[in-house]
Amino acid sequence: MFGRISAREWNDHLRHLGTRYPLKVRAQDPPPPTHAWQVTPEYNDTLRRWTATVRPGSVNARIATAATTYGRLSDETKDWVKLRYPNRAWADPSVVQLPLDFRPPIDLSWREIGGDAAPLAVSAESDEIRQTFETVPAFFLAQGVRRPGSTANAAIGQRRLFACDLVLRQPRAFLTNEISVLPGGVLGGSILSVNPKASVPRDVNDPARVVALARFVVPAVQNTFEEVFFQRFLDEPTDELHLSTIYALSQPLEEGGSFPVYIDASFQLMTRYYCHYNLAHATRTLPRFETPPITLVTGLAAGLGDVLYNFILSTQNDFTQAVMDLFQQRSLRGSFWVV
Image (cartoon, rainbow, N blue to C red):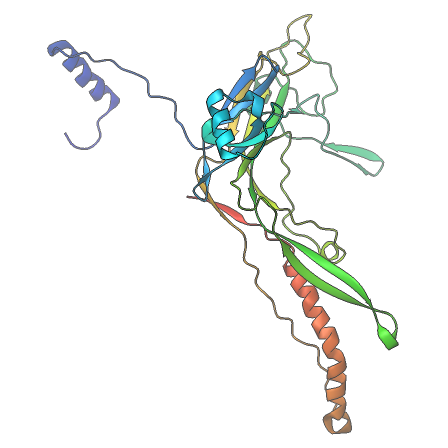
């Protein structure tokens, strides 16, 4: 038989085999799908908090890591850590970065979403105070979570919602700048010296890390010229990618009851994914933009005046090009892409 067959035809074939031949046929559900960065939440009764393990994913063919404490590792993993770092003394509170295939437990940090959540920003316009809240997904509104900004007391059947973001951090080189004020000599005043530089963090060769944040904030894409020139910007030493968001939904509020003080085992956890694949990463290439020099053509003194004027303007042209280089070289932010 070639081509596709319907589910009904397939079931008829199985029934035929099971009734006419000495074969045991059993229908079995497929296993749950697995993918890179898949999250498995677990409640730790000892610590009374939720943790999560992440299925191994790679960046540039290297397994990502996560931080945990040495005392929470199995004996087998502790032996591996001692072999990996033979010159370091380990105690239970010591923090260790473990590859994800060791299933290190990641402690989750939470923010509240919905009626009891704090506003993201508060602004005043025409004597009116406006508050900005995080949007509650429609699925959780249907489950009984109150809309943000609600001032009414929680009613029977309503729920509370919390969220935690899992973020991938890739170490990289980053840019800094030096702006020095030099004396102007006999002319008086001052001269600015602009020197863009690149710095390399100590962990630039380490694998990417998975961290849990109460709220992931997307970094600004562009900086203004004033922010760059007056050093009011900071090029981060890492690139970040939002992997997933873990939601914790409380049980419906019962009559005469109250919500739990902390996120306990009674909460229902669900994960929304933004990435399912192994990744590659690279920092950006910095193109250099040439600025046309300022020239002055007057024809004075048979052209000798033009030579003198342009010589004076050459310092200004050099400074303008240096400022343009600084403005273009404000970030080495790289990119992730799917392998």
